[in-house]
Length: 338
Ligand SMILES: Cc1ncc(COP(=O)(O)O)c(C=O)c1O
Image (cartoon, rainbow, N blue to C red; front, side, top):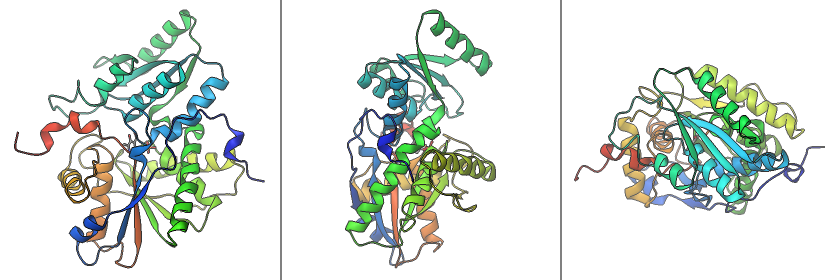
């Protein structure tokens, strides 16, 4: 028998269920042939500015506490939403938090290295270590870990994006939450579109679909890596491992659908489609996306609608995975009147 989510240590952090709203004005803006559009507001998970990591962190922090750790260590880019949310989760759980951040994005906007998530990491009281340019990341990590060890800290490490089986449990549970919300609206055969990066969100959703095979088909939009095939393989492996942790059946070979063409030059580098999507959704719906993930994810959804991949009689749910603080790090890309 499949395991229940209650079988895993979990530290409550999120405001659940997150709302599911319809985007009628965005649909109108996209023209007569656009599908019915909904948005699942995981930007409203409530912890430290909201976002998808809150759901993963409920299980990650649960595991850290079960291990009797007193310090959570994680990593990511300088503007990592995962790092910011981990700092907030650690604060809420009374744990110390060490963030090892990589200055890996070529974007040179003036606010990128000091505002947005980077500012919030400091406000949440995280111990932020930035890998200096040219330094070897593994050596840097080892030095930080041995320093913590020497101080007697009991560390719990979670990788970039919190994309482990433990973290993905949060999105398997989220999938069931959404399937119930669609049931309540009598919506059948919907599709779920979201920005995919380190893959834990998509892996969890795909594993959750094994429990509710009548739920929406999941389309990830690659906002992370040039090699989409390799990324799809990695997410498939994580989804299969998550399904195994829940004692679910086997995953279909083609269960992970990953759309490419929306990354642009590289991870974290703005695209024209992202700017259009952020401004369009803000002006049609009063909803803020972000420059690195949901903006490119929404740009992908808009492009797929314009290419008529999704038809007028379909229902598409966009999963808003958060990231709004990133707008302040990329302020030069938007507006135009300042
Ligand atoms: C706002 C936002 N959306 C989407 C994602 C992608 O989630 P995942 O890394 O689980 O693929 C991230 C990851 O950092 C994120 O911060």
